[in-house]
Image (cartoon, rainbow, N blue to C red; front, side, top):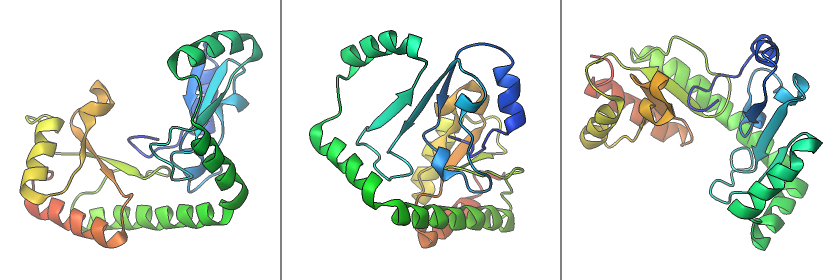
Length: 209
């Protein structure tokens, strides 16, 4: 879902599974899918390592608490990697994870509803301001926008936007060669701040001319 906010359809995942290759499936945003129930790639292929965590849907970004589900025969290799790279999460973070699992279901559902309201607002507001995305993101809290000045790198453009408007957006180049020519806009902010930022982006015309 990062950076596009797009959720793979079951048809796409079936086609990937038909390739009959091992897949590492990053499912950290699975619980922030707004239109359809999320599907794990585990449902499509047994050759899957599914990675999930607490950073997004439980708003514990930076705490680095997560887990993975892997075929039993791959576990020894995963165990060696884990021991050499990280060993374990600290105790207070594990305790926080237990607490949110026990107590935060209602809060997290409200947070998800709020993100969805912001998503719908961003889609409509960008259309009104002449920055139509051309697609409908249905998960996470990002949109990927293709800017018009193809002669300018996404990193250069983001620096210019920040200097002239004070709005921070992410260059598409951070997400691979295919995302060059795009910028990622996050709506993990208040509705008021999102609106102010979008208006500044439209008024500066750096993305649209």
